[in-house]
Length: 237
Image (cartoon, rainbow, N blue to C red; front, side, top):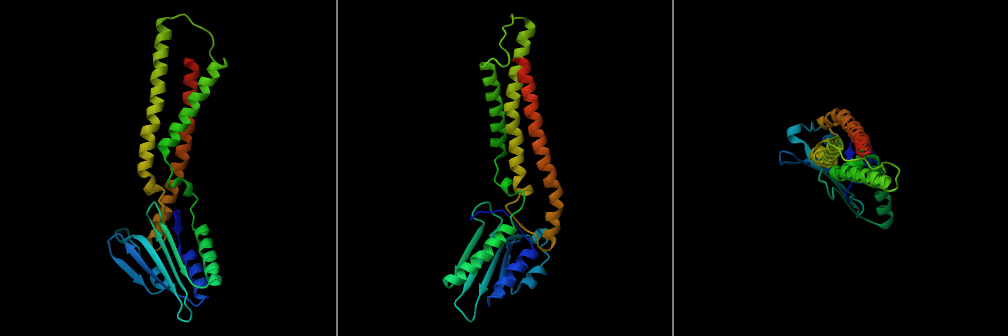
């Protein structure tokens, strides 16, 4: 499955405690940025890992095994943008249902507020907004709500028409450029997966303010571009 997540020690501790209550021994393996796989025999050992930028966790796997019963759990979190959460549970139907419910609770808790932005195509979003605006103005002109009076041709009206066309072109190009740069920084600003463990927690906190500014700035810019477009379209109609 594909789901954005921010994995914190709090949520990992809660999951591990619930799994250990089912007599499962929990171990971890982390694939890091330096291409080394590190194994941790317990959650405490994992939480001792500093997770510095050069050894940033890219993928985290959890194994739960029971010595008394034939019960196994495997859960993997990946920073990849697709199929980044993998789940495997082997056991009786009753135990499988219980563990699946625990994992569902975890996935619900670790979903970040910006989750809907992790795979958003900002170019398409901006172009759609501009298209809707143009269609609305065209419909208003067709219905005679705006415009509707013929003006004699003059150098001023010709220049006004040319300026209006240039502005219309600019407001088509602007979403392409702005959307391109937003898509470029999306993976860093709105990552699909975050391991807020060790130094990763501070990196996540530091980016929260920047994320908020980006979101606010985006919607303010979008609203401003729509308003300015409408003003110029009405002026040149």
